[in-house]
Picture 1 (spheres, rainbow, N blue to C red):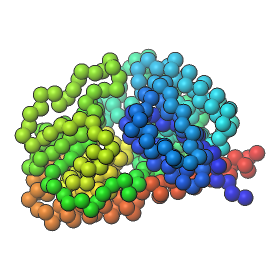
Picture 2 (cartoon, one colour):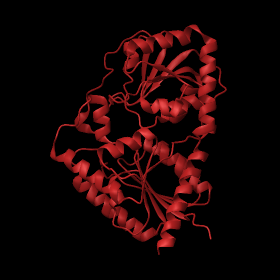
Picture 3 (cartoon, rainbow, N blue to C red):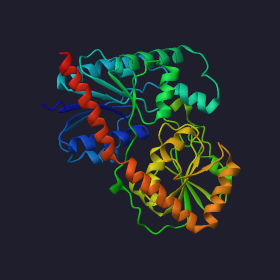
Length: 375
C-alpha cells in the first residue's frame, strides 16, 4: 500500500521568496496528482502573483491578510490565524500540513506537520548586527512561539545545513531535522540569450541582510542594475530608503520588477552579485545560475555550501574585494564564460524543482507511513 499523501495543506506568505518557493512546491505536487489546499498570509496577493494558479489542477487557494510572525504586535493576529487554519484543517481534512511558518507547528490538530525554517529574526539579527536582538516583550513572545512550533512539529526542514544549525542554536536542541535544498523550474529562465555585459543584483533594498547597497560602494567596472523593493512592508518602518539620492555613474536602481522583466534582466546579465550577509539559501542566485550568469558571491557559509567552487567569492562583506572581482570578470570574457557555465551546470544538477519536490514527497511518505504504523 502506498503511503504517499493524497492531499497536502500548504501555508505561505506573499511577501518575498517564500511565495516563489510555495509556487514551485505546489505546482510540483499538483503535477504529481496531489491535491493541495494553499493558504496564504501577509498581504492579499496581487493578480500577477497568482497567475500561476490559473488552470492548475487539484489546487484550492485561500488568501488571507493575517500578519506574519516576524512582524511587530502580532500576537492576536497569530492566535486568530491559527484558529482559522485549524478550522480549514477540520473542513478539508488533509493528510499532511506543510507549514512555511514556525508558529503553526503547534497547531492542535491530529495531522503530521512539517515546518520549514526559511529564516528567522534572531539568526538574521545576529548575522547583521553581531549581537542578540534587544530584549523586549515581543522578542520573548517570538522566541517562545518559535520554540513551541518547532518542538511540536512532526518534522523540521531547512533549505541549508547552515540554516538548520541556526534553528538548533537559537530555538531547539533536538537532533532531528533535515535539509532539503530549494529548487526552481529551469524552463522559467533563458540561459541562451546573448549577454549584454552588465551586472545584476537582486534583493530588498531595506534589508541589511541582503546588503545590495554594497554594489554602490564597490564602484563596479561594468554597468550594474539593482532590483528590489525599497520600502519596508511594515508601514511603521517606511521612509528609510537606503538608495535615495544615489547617483553613481554605473549603478542603476530599477525598483521592483515583474517576473517577465526580471527574467529578461537575468537572461541578458553577464554577472550576478550575491551580496547577502544573511542568506538561508538564496533563490535569486539560483535564478541567475539558471540564466547562465557568472556569480560573484559574498564569502558566507551558505553560499559555500550551496555553490562550492562553481562561483567566485569576494572577501566577507568587503566592497573593495567585490569591485576587484567584478573588474577581473569584466577584463576576462573567458573567465566570465567559464563561471557562467559552472553555475548553470551545478544548478541543473542539484537545484531543480523536480528534485526538491521528490525530496519532499519522500519525507511525506516517511511521515504518513509512520502515522499508519502508529495507529
